[in-house]
Length: 428
Image 1 (tube, rainbow, N blue to C red):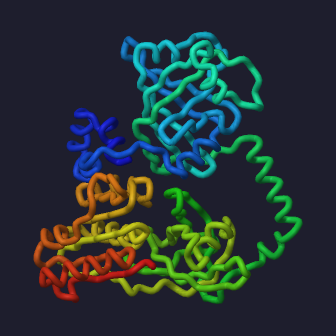
Image 2 (cartoon, rainbow, N blue to C red):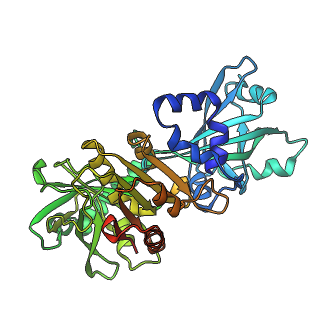
Image 3 (cartoon, one colour):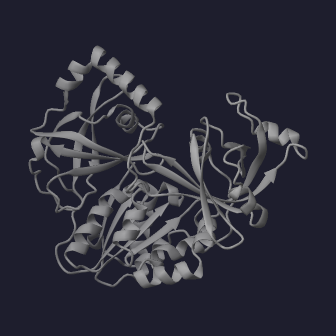
């Protein structure tokens, strides 16, 4: 949805501010390419179906915006098809501000929030009011079987674009029902296995870490914060380092998996990793997403580094594909901190699949370049062009799937870039 979103959101005034603030180069690739299909995917459809409220913005004939909160049972905002949403409109305070605004301007913007998981989906569309006399069958599709109040009208929205927002600054909030569910699960866990969980330590290393934070970065990628007991300082690390972590699989076997550290290397209070769930993989990522909880303790060895940065003043070119961004993010922090020259090139299927996209665009606006590869995406990563345009002494760091690694090595060989100048780490 990169181009559709950018066409609506990045007006000339917005572009001017981006240019002034240094983020224009990072966002410009989103505006280039063929027009995309605005179809909602399975992830968006499931997310919408689970919501029990949303915020809707309309614009009045006097130019003033109006934001309305809409609430109801989960799923009251219905996905009629991949391009169309709709909801039933019941009698409220009878001000009819949103309905009146739609009579003059069909454009709407929706914000859908999942506070516990720190996720938000924004949707742009064109809305029309549906009256029972004119379209009774369509209005019937908007009814909720659990709410029998009389529907005054329906609102049907044709989706023009959508985008997932960064989870940063979303404070987790819980409904009364969610809290009761959490308490019930906690009581059951305490009764059944809380003593074992409290005493359990996975692994046999000398460094004891506790999971103290979890953040959902994308639909499939979750970040985990690991800290030492009582806030003790952690062993120092350099960019590119990884931890070997114990993971209990579904069959109860404990296996070891390696995950790159993503935090600023100068931090001594926390290690951070990001894990992409792969249900077709060997089971480690699935077990982490399903089984790791706050408070779980891990006994590990100190981090090691097989993907280190060079220490001299040569410029760097950082290239990441998908979840391969994890060590690349740490490298960008380290290079920025020492004032080194570098560029960062990040490719993924869609913007919504990019872990840390907003963080990178904010912290490294002038250095970052983003590429999207699904069907009608804005721009694909051209490895030959990136390597060819880099300064002659530059050192290249590439992390991602095997195809990205192979493409980078092939381009380097064709351009006469020696193996000492291109370092790779593969995520399989």
